[in-house]
Length: 155
Image (cartoon, rainbow, N blue to C red; front, side, top):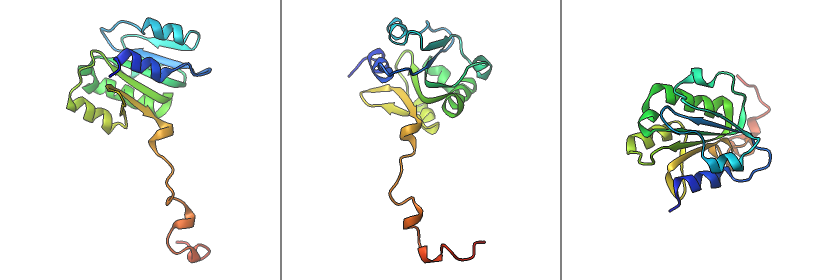
């Protein structure tokens, strides 16, 4: 099993010009030193993030990382931050609870927002819009019932 830091850095990877937003919850230190080196020039970070007001002025990015205490993940302010990151600010969001001991209530809350646990590091959760809604073979007009009626009257 990988450490949380190793799994997080592997997920961020040496991707090209990907811009990263790094948000840190109250009472936690800033971004990892290794991440700052890996993402030099592409990293925008904010600390003491507790609600939507702390996201003011952030531009959309390719990836966002939210480091927060597990207990804070259940607060409405952080839940709103997770939803805003997912919906408007980043294509990919990583949730990094510090310390990494999260219980089933927190996992359920993250799953309800669409965040999935990362393989090999169950504390780290990820939302990736590219993997969220895969294209299905049956979901196209060609396979719908009664294609002979496609040119007929529509209600």
